[in-house]
Length: 225
Image 1 (cartoon, rainbow, N blue to C red):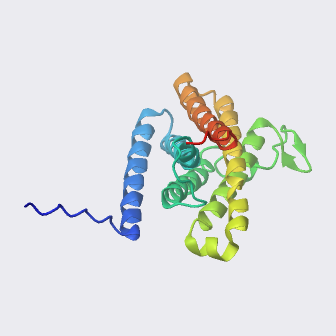
Image 2 (cartoon, rainbow, N blue to C red; image 1 turned 135 degrees about the horizontal axis):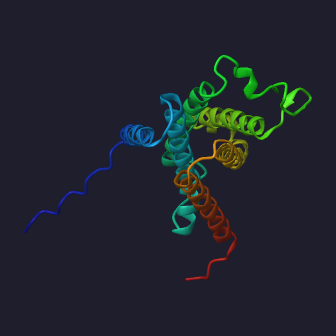
């Protein structure tokens, strides 16, 4: 009589996370390199655009995992590693985009990203034209990325408690809105080509649709089995 085949053991959690981080990193860096080659402009401009689209794509994945669990009627815990890991890499690429993007325009006069030039409108000394609004949206989004990445760990979850941790994580929705506003304004300012505009709109629409579908599914009572 043949012996039963032993069930393979799942890899330890730490090993799975390391493997996932490597896959996300390699995929993100490869996508960044390909996009940078496809985009037009100087090296800094192309890398800035490429990291922006990759960061937005990773953020989209992060925000979509929860709704997908709901729609597929799978467990959707308060925090799970896959969502954390994509969120961490979204923050890394988003912050890289911020750092590089601040060197693309107005080289040597970085303050003009946020403070008005002589011909620019201002309120309370702050730049309020579309360029300034886009930069303030991007700045706040970068700070939120940093905050959310900093608490994406078990220690923060234990210290803050589930309710407080979840309340802070809900700022991810404001982050998504600011990212979309920042991207949309820059699409107009830089008069981006139609394929780039289409890619941006497709990403934003997909994330929004999944969020709405997941929320609708949560509110819809399930029929008893």
